[in-house]
Amino acid sequence: MAVSAEAAVTEAEQIQQFRDFLISYNKLSERCFKDCVHDFTVRHVRDKEDKCSLNCMEKFMKMNQRVSQRFQEFQIISNENAIAAAKKTGNLPL
Image (cartoon, rainbow, N blue to C red):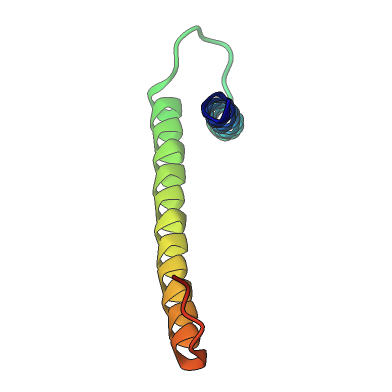
């Protein structure tokens, strides 16, 4: 029973992560579209619009990568500080 409960939790987490991804993707798509596409008089995407949307996506991806990197750096420092504090007080977890 515990295995199926864990599987259900894992599946629910995966579904939530996928939902979060889709929400982020849709927000980004809408934002880049609004910022870059202004001319609806032709059927094709103009070069300027194409470049703008690619730059928009690239900037978002770089920003997202940098934020993730900084978060990881912060977590490492936070963990190191917690370990140092635990060593000082003698409350090391097993």
